[in-house]
Amino acid sequence: MTQPFVIGFNSCQGVAIRDAVLSRLFPMNVNGVDIKSSRIVPIQTVQPDQLPALGVYIVSENSVMDGNVSIPQFVVRLELMIALTVMASDPVFIDGALDDFAGNVYNILLTDPTFLDMFEYVENVKRGFAFKKEGESYIAEIGVTFAVSYRSRYEPLAPNSLTMVDIKIAETDGTPIPEERIILTGA
Image 1: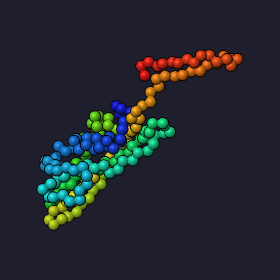
Image 2: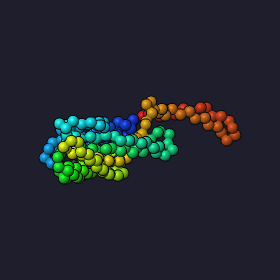
Image 3: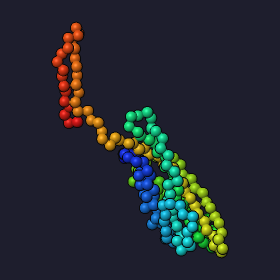
Image 4: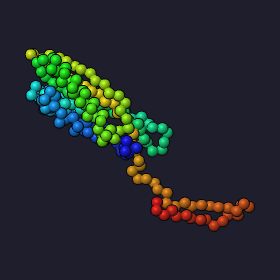
């Protein structure tokens, strides 16, 4: 990771990661057919003329305190779902297209150094299928879930910089010495 901490509200980084996934995958095609639509929130119904459809969703984002520190900082676990929904009359076509899509997702995302620099590490990747038949056509969806981790840190909005120190010194016999003031420059 090029930057050790994301400064500010951690969901902004989660959204940036989600959008980076979408921008890398949306120009893909499935068995020579361009993906026709994309979405960033789960939508239950998709019209046949919108298929194949790509969805990239933030499933969850969990922040856990990173040690006992004065400035709040967290290890954030972001879980993304990358879903492709296709419709075809031949289940073999669907199965092959979905497998190819999953392989392309792995290759595109896991070999892109600019994408991998957006977080510290990939925790896990898993995939699952859903098939159903509507009328004469099969509708299928593959979901590839990526869990990634990064750190976020919340710096104070108005930092309290140390600019002056007052020192009171006394002789060993207890006689006070006049107060000294040290001004720190460049703070």
